[in-house]
Image (cartoon, rainbow, N blue to C red; front, side, top):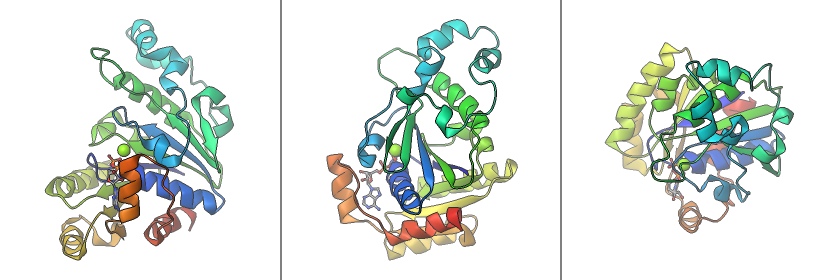
Length: 250
Ligand SMILES: Nc1ncnc2c1ncn2[C@@H]1O[C@H](COP(=O)(O)OP(=O)(O)O)[C@@H](O)[C@H]1O
Ligand SMILES: [Mg+2]
């Protein structure tokens, strides 16, 4: 199953991806996390893992891609993505692994003036389109903030979409937009409420497009807050994430 985790910046995507991956791995699922956020650098630390080399390098790096893609980037990428890919086809230097979780990183912005993140996402789309997963294998994409990935068609390659909402007007507006976009591509979407107290919970539940699709309500958790602040590995298992994992493992 391929799942994307999306939402506005800072809503808790990477935290939830980490907790969910741990929960799934503890249940015996083989998990691939794809760090698809070009602007944040902490996911591998949440996981207590080394960051692998950017997958962008697989097609010659950003500069190589921009030089060589010519007028037909799809034809260029087709040289690298011919048939189906399984998890073991991912070259070792582009994945790190720990406790049943593999981590890939599509690409990070490193330097002033290097150009936009579009090449990372073109390669990511080609990869997820070719990725074939067996039973008990789950790929989770930790997306960049916002909805550009919908525009690129990456979510069209997913089986299931999770949208994380923090207690903010922007999250509510984004949830409405994502509901429309998910419906347009025929993908199921669940809403994960994060960092909410009782008052915010009610506002968000009333505001999301489909109350029945609220998969969990996670309060502010002081341990998550402290570990997130220090950049140390997240150590907790929280029951709310168990309910999200149930949507995947049945
Ligand atoms: N339920 C929570 N309780 C306390 N802190 C949280 C919770 N969820 C996320 N955080 C903290 O909020 C910050 C942003 O979370 P993060 O997962 O990095 O967001 P995103 O990936 O959406 O940008 C981090 O410092 C993280 O530790
Ligand atoms: Mg993040």
